[in-house]
Length: 372
Image (cartoon, rainbow, N blue to C red; front, side, top):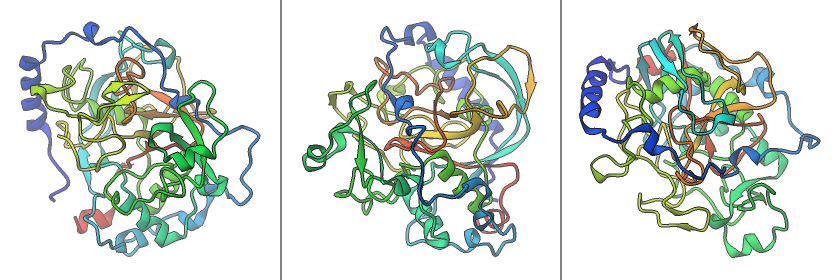
């Protein structure tokens, strides 16, 4: 089957190449400025309530028909499909790091983790794929129900900015924009007509779970996500090694210039890029770092031990969920979180213009196995 990829040879080849090409030490990569871009600060007010929401995780209308004739299996799009999954052989790896950049984020210590086999989406969920879900179910995202979401200031039109009087105290470049949602990423005067192959944004953790249920998939655990990000490499910063731009080419969509005022867009993008853009890692995954933050299934926890563990799933409860990978707003001098070991968090109902997801599965959905 085309999309179930046996990656062992690719891992060995990539590992050998990176060992000879990467001469940058991890210590050299640690930035002097350890401030935050404020991504973890853009959360819903705890007293804010949805007027028309339901408990999304318990909504039986969004539970998939596991048969091959489910709505997800029959979904058709005029756009090239990007819902393919790759098989990732489980194994042991060192999760986290003993050289954390953001100690408070719980990046360390490095600990041995053993994972079972699983599948992971090759791409982040795109606007086109999310539209299929919405059209099939009539689903309404939390940003739509709340009536607003957070957008980075430099992406807004002057007209939209002129009507905003609030900002995030810890990160004033983040503005709550009324009418901003997955269909209107920068407010009512924006749309996604020319960005259907870009990752869907302004999706909460709850929204992501609802989509996964419909698609017969699930969110990856943090351990699965990080294992996939590393692509078989040991002790490396990025999915491809330690050099940010191997052979002087851009491998990731992040911020270039001076954050938060000047983005030179040397990688070709000021905001999101297509989910198919940039080289893959050894596990054939596009944009596993950069572009948009990706939700994981785990509740947030910063206290880890170095005791070996098998198939960890994080705490049973919590207030925030883990997100991984960084986004197009990350910069080494300000939010150096586009490393595989880096992590951040948001509440389950939070959404923003740089927050998306990709799906995982223990077994590949039947409709993908039969109709790649």
